[in-house]
Length: 253
Image (tube, rainbow, N blue to C red; front, side):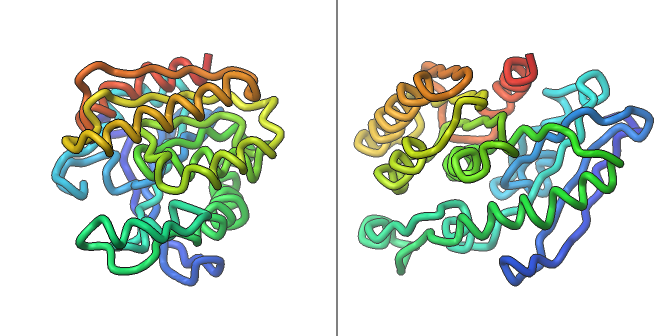
């Protein structure tokens, strides 16, 4: 990474979520920023050493932020089950019966997390830039789920959204109902999934079926919707790292 493109790590206290939020920002100090790429699971974006599973998106390898005039902002996820709580506005009561490490209902705090982005984080970012600019919101797995929900809650703010291998099965009926009721006529949405997201056939099938269902809806409701299934690709940062560059090219075109 070029020396003029350092990644700064700061924390801000969210009164909405009542916790400290870790924010990672990369931008070219000499470029007039024209858009913000706002990503969930920020700890996984830039460096392998910081990533949850030792593998990052290496996002600055996939995107030339100077050419795109982008500020990339990563918001670290909450710890443990807090991530699932904050990445879904809706509660899932079934996972605790299916996954050993989940011992309670999860989800339900996603609207607060989205409100944090809208009312606390974005105003600070606009102040840093010196103006309001378009926002591209994106993430993988549950990060894709919460990105689509955010577009439905705030369609005038999140007009460009990317969902990589979205875990849309998490609470699919509620998400679908939310998307169906929202005005998404100005939305540009990129969606993808691998065909080997999980070793478990039922879970893998759930990824494919739910992404296909949502993509079919958004191809009708959204301004533009791109959906692609990557043959043989798995559920990890290595796979998403290969797709982030082309996805950003498409969403900004």
